[in-house]
Structures are given as structure tokens and as C-alpha cells.
Length: 167
Image (cartoon, rainbow, N blue to C red; front, side):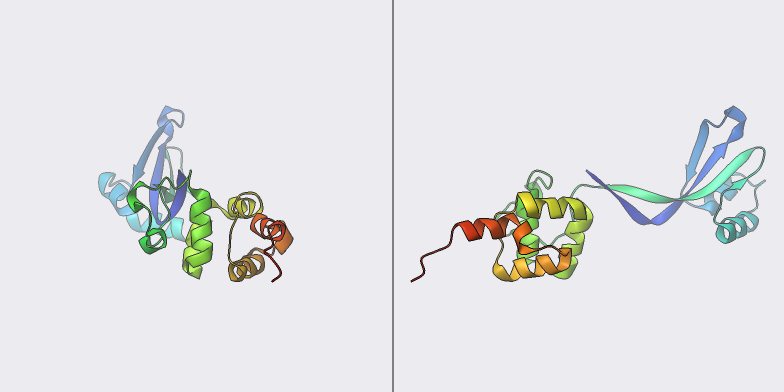
């Protein structure tokens, strides 16, 4: 399962009274300040916004952290997988099929989403070791995009071994 950063942040508050083990997470700085009126929202917001470092005193440490969520599948169009039950695809076990489909039939945005989900290194490794068929046009695009030579791709070397008749 992949972990993906979301464009939201949370406020992490570490209370120092228990040797740094007491931590609270708030969805907003305003929510924290409403719960603890001794801390002024405007003062903390200015400090955290300008200095980009945690606010800290003898009692507390406050910082903004990015929010992460677990992603169970890439955000790809169902039409690419018309012959599968889309909701039952095991995205980790079926990586070869998914990568092949997206590269061959997907848009540049689909490529980006697939690479974000599997990781560029994993996609390149799959191209070198696992993907056994891509069209000639896709092979050209893949080589250009990932800066690979055709000879590095398993689908190309396999195609060279199984040449058709010359007639």
C-alpha cells in the first residue's frame, strides 16, 4: 500500500510535561487555539508561517506537518481496464498488466499517476524485466520518457528474438 502526501497540513502539539511523549494532533491551528486559549492564534500563525520552524517554549512544541493518506489504488480511468472487474483489481499483484496498459493506452496524466503510484524505479525495472509486449510507438515513447535504449527493454529484446517471416 502506497502512502501519498495530501495538500493539507495538521498541527502537531508535543507537550513537554511528560518527557516528550504526550502528543496531540489538531486539524487546524485555530482548533488548537480554541481548545487552549492561553495560546494566541495570530501570534502562533505568524511565527509558524514566517520562520517555517516549530514554535517551542518550556511547555510545548507546535509545528505544522503535511497530512498523509494511504492510497490503495492509482487514480486511473476505468476505460483502460475495460476487460477487468475494475473494483477487484489487485493493483500490486497486477502491476505488469497495469503498467503495460497505461503506457500503451493511457494519457500523459495517466502515466504520471501510474509512476506516482508504483514509483519511477519500479516502473523502469518492470520495463527492463517483466513487460513482454508494447507497441513500437509505445517503445519509442517509453525510451524517450525514461531515457532508456530499446535494448534495455524486455519487450524489445523479446520482439527481436521472435521475428516473423521476411515474406
